[in-house]
Length: 120
Length: 110
Image (cartoon, rainbow over all chains, first blue to last red; front, side, top):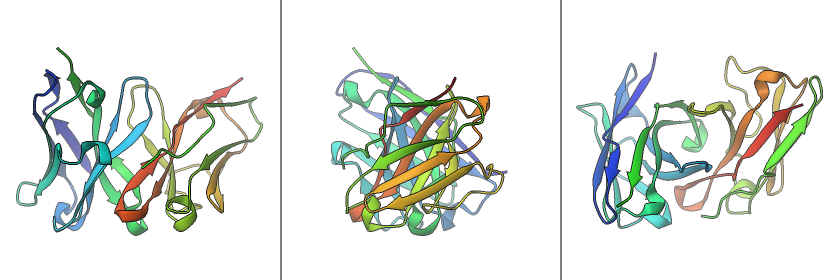
């Protein structure tokens, strides 16, 4: 069974940094594009970033461009999200998800989520 | 990268059919047949219910169906059941290889 397990969430002050990790197992990680999706408290889902299977292309939500960096380590079967200059509005549960379907347009497998709280 | 527009809430009685709309633009829903729908129960990760506008993943009830016309996609739940009470989100591939989710719809079974 495919597994995605996020880690690295926590409480951070505004302007601070945090790095999320997502450990993938039971599938050929290097063959799939991957994404981060977040959900603020009591809010809807919001796509944050995606990375192609070879890491050659990365895509970001406008509001995180220049602050967040998505990366992957295929040898470690891991996905990362480096988050800098964090703002209160970045407070959310961050989900790691495996891209699927044509155009990498859907997410069948999701992690359990990692809570990031940005507050002083 | 504006969110797709969904009604905040939809309700129906058991056995009835309900339809949730999802309105975007020609840069997302209207430009691609890459619309998906997710069901989310409180405290849980989203579950894929429909992909590529009309397709159901294995294991998803055929009471769930999707469609699209122009810049608007729709999810129909037939034979509404108590377990269908949840939040539902549409999503679409968008220009520049980004993705966009809908604002979310709370489905209540009366």
